[in-house]
Image 1 (tube, rainbow, N blue to C red):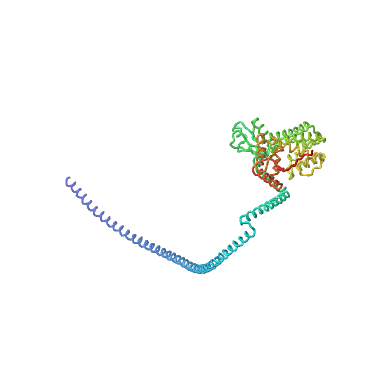
Image 2: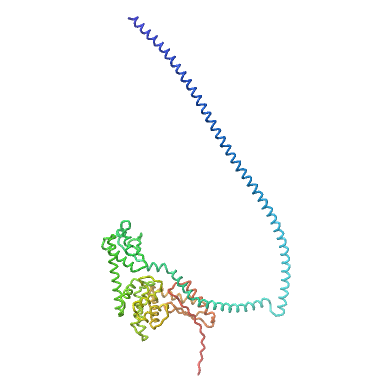
Length: 511
């Protein structure tokens, strides 16, 4: 048994040793084979890489040779340009040197001429000095005395010539007075354009809260757009608290928009369909109110037989202003003044009142024709069968046409009185008085003025000068100077007439 076990172990050991020897021999042969294959593959890869590197080297070499050739070509071109520029500069240098030489020659010539001139000037001064001494000896006057006498004579001559020149200029100005008047009117419009435009084209609608403002705007602004389309008024909604601005030149449209907004806000239902309905209703109400206002005005003034369209136009005056003065109120004032003045002159007061009421109807036309309001009013009066003397008074109240009736100057004067009275055109009394004082003080600042009077509500300035201080020629220039200073330094409505008065009185008594 023991022998069997030992034999088994020995056999197992011998078998293991033989297996190990064979396994080791197989592994070594496989290892050698793998090594040989790897070396072969490495040789192939090495050859490929060498070929690839060689090819890249050749490509790079070709590119570099091409680039070097291009650079050499550029360098050659630049060298050629530099050579050409060098040649040009050489030519310019030669030309400059030649001109420099010529300049030097001219300078030497001028220096020689200047020396000759200096010598001639010294000789001339000596001759003048000798002649002056001879003249002083002959006249018995020194040079300074003769100079003073000459200056005085020249002063008088210059003054006379200047005054003559001024008179010529004034005559020319009178000939071109129309053009100058238009320039002054345009300048005045420029001074007050912004203020007047805002005053006459904007209405502010007050609201209680921003919530109502949002409802007026509507979703995506559709309510605002519907209101603008229906009324023809631009509605400005900004950050101003509790206010919406209605902007349009037509006062009737602004009033319709204001009333429509008021009704919509009061009602609370604000949407496009409701807006169109309310605007249509308000338009009818405003038209009825315009006609009612016209009828009431004619009844109050005792004027009968007016065409219905003229009555409607009179009613529209309620919504129009001129220089801040309500046009209907102005027309009523003018009508009453015309009636009083016509009565005093023994004319027909009813006709005068009728002409006074209708004189500004051209300011509220349904259309916008290219005519002055006086001529347009005359055409409207003729269209609706008014009498010729009334039509002439309407058309001539701004001297657009010739006056052919006695009513025309009455209407013109009463129109001026109504517009010129203090406070009529939003001019407070303090400002009015200050403007009159400024006018008088401005004229008093000139030498020779003894008294000044601002009359006709500041439309005319009377300046009285001393007869011993200013002559007749100087009065004209003084009037022009005062007018220019007033025009440059003061702001005033209309125009100011400056009258300079100079008189000499000789009083004696026969006993």
